[in-house]
Length: 209
Image (cartoon, rainbow, N blue to C red; front, top):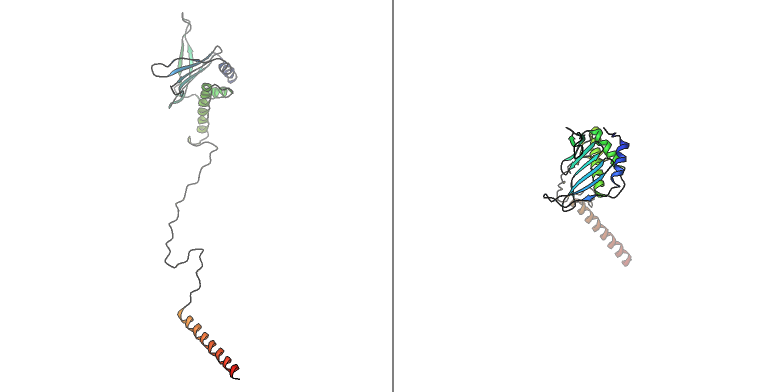
């Protein structure tokens, strides 16, 4: 069995993005194939719809195999090579019963070294990176819908009901003018009247004197 260490997988990825992709015509299902194949044990097969959206990808890195389908996520597997035949050794993809984290982490690390502009390789690179992130969040006890660096918003408290104020009652910051009672008003009128009479008396005394 070929060595599937991270360094060996990285070498296969580097060889993968040096090859020229071969595009096929649309099939009966309307999907066309885009095939990256290199002789160093790396292969990427992409199925693309008429709008250019990737619907399915299969990545082979040496003896490791990865399948992604829209709405289904990533699955891992391995290659089993049969005996020699006239048309060459038969290769069978054996899917893992469930996702193998170690196999996925190696591929994500190897694909993470890609810095080119090929949109199909970038798509598979992001698919594996997101799958690795999901594994890390699950192992860290983080809710899948929440990223590790995402703050949790506090729960919103219901707003207090509006205060019903009676007519004439001051608002919290409002100061009402002083209230003048009727008895106080009569006293003020009487004092004013006395003052007027005293003033008239003084004026008459001055004029007559």
